[in-house]
Image 1 (cartoon, rainbow, N blue to C red):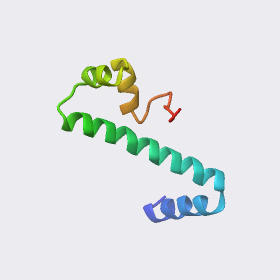
Image 2: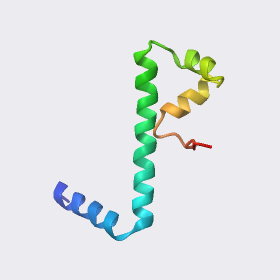
Image 3: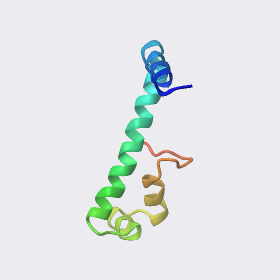
Length: 77
């Protein structure tokens, strides 16, 4: 399977199926937010523990927020 056919399959799925498109958008937003949290934390020279303390969260929770592959995906709620 070449790159063009993969792209075409993806575009066809996004066009044809609103549920697929919604899931795709949510995943892209989630992944982007994960990387933004990490980049901003590192830009400020903070550790996960320091950010956790400032946000009143455990360091482990910050780790999950920064991990796009985490099993549990946080929501805005």
